[in-house]
Image 1: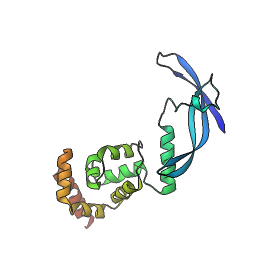
Image 2: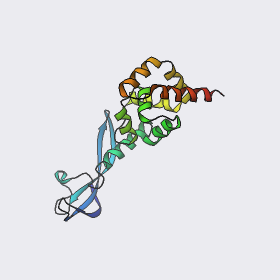
Image 3: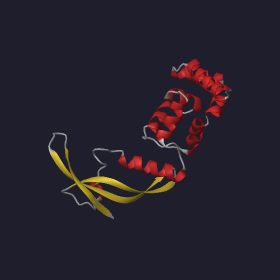
Image 4: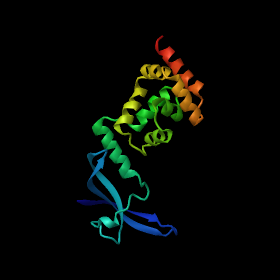
Length: 176
């Protein structure tokens, strides 16, 4: 069922105003093979039929709105870490995104996208990201693999000694 919730005017490429209905539609999407029910928002030109799905546009002022809300529902239903929680845990360790990604065995750009809520971590990455919530165990795990960490740092031009030093310092402080 389509519900019109607002009417907005937004400039086209020439700057001329175009009027749209903002609608909400209950939809179900699949994320990692799991069905997620959500209320999605679309914009429809006022000259078009709001029931015609061919006319639906992602919100022009926020094209990622529906994805972000889908991700939030998935994270809540499956107890995945929220982007802010991941960022806060990483920052608590004093790590840059690149350092955390290397230590966790993740792609640096993917971690950046997850923290920006532009990507949703699959289960395998969620397990890795949870290491950030247990700083002592995380630091100990990284400390046991210095050769691998140094090689990954070399490949990505990250200062390995700085990364290992941050975690060693944290680990030693955690035992006081």
